[in-house]
Image (cartoon, rainbow, N blue to C red):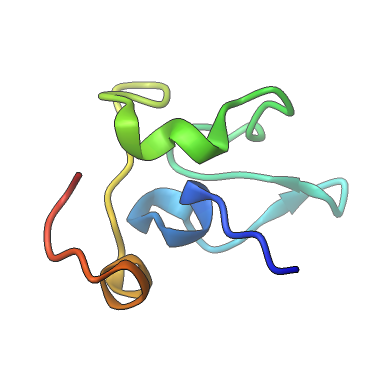
Length: 70
């Protein structure tokens, strides 16, 4: 089974930097996305952290057929 969370399809996920080799980072969470962050609900939130919210990238639009932010 393949699982894609919202962060996978967000423009703000950055360059894919990992802290300690496994903690993902993004523009909203430059020090690491918290383990308990609700990544599956990020597209429903106005803001994830630091005034930055989910913005769909090209993959999100392609895979889910959506053209604009949700």
